[in-house]
Length: 490
Image (cartoon, rainbow, N blue to C red):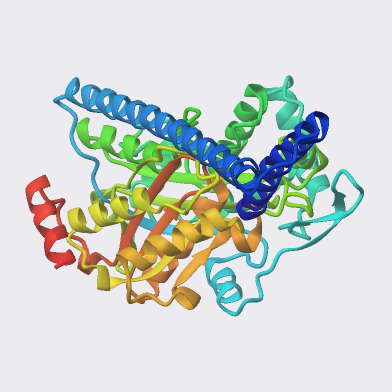
């Protein structure tokens, strides 16, 4: 219910209750009220009650805000204590984006999807199969050419041999069908690594194996999947990568812990490799599908499905996207002079849920973007695109737009701010990685730097910066970053 309507109903209720009670009392006592009685009991009394209700509401809001601030302060203190407990940790290094691939509604490549979104051809449509609780079709971001039967045939023997306990439902088959295509595309991009042929020759000849970096496969599978299905999905993607290029024994799987954002998981792996002085070669891969009765029913039960009764709900989508990444030393082994540089992400946690009523607050995103640009030494004017995983909810799109307006005022919101889930439906982490793929394609095309924003989650906020190699600079010290931020603000 809209705030003004609820306030009006409360006011009418208070006045109605006061008038009915007073008039009944006067009628029962046969009292003829004077003008002062009418003013006192029929006007001032309801107003005083409304004022009291308003004061109680403000008091309750103040107490809730104080508790939220205290919780945020405690979390920040705990994070600082954890950081202080590891003095040997080194800051994560920048990464080179060697390639990107995606399969999303409205596009099977970053170029096609970007053009569709810019031309306003990427629109959500009524789903031909999915219905809400009242039998009406719902909006969705469905891919029409997902071959579930072919995916089941290709995985049947492998699944029986390696994960017989995994029971995949239709939505999971769809997600893995999409993820398989993206994994194969990115695995093929590993072929130019100069150490790969010698390793494969030695492996075939059963000779001592020469050094070859371990490929860190970060599999972003939906948290809603049960453990057996998550394990089976991750192992299958690993097998696909091995089939199309990289040796199976040189692929390590990483499933981010619940609550850990994809960008932070990637930063942590890069930091560990830098600290151990080990080469870093990574594949960030996400696939998800909410196109099925299971997801629709779950969202309907939580009252978060977009329909006529919940205009601020979510639209189910599906897709897969991935990035092939390397540290500077490994990136130099590939012939990719135009590759984008990905800086360590920034962000934080909102004090209150973005799903709660109230004004749109982009403060966490603004702070993250400002800090990121300052530490990277990239001027805000060099950023010519903002790609985000934001969906159709006003709280998400509005937050992204507000961040862009505050941090990058010269950007054109109509042509330089792209919201993936708003155009393709909510595909979880795949929406974020697709936004990263759009950003790296923008940089690779020589169009400038790009910011990638993640704000689908009610609390977690992340910002990533991708820039051409010519803009890449060593990470600044905290003091120099502060000076750069102040200079940019001036």
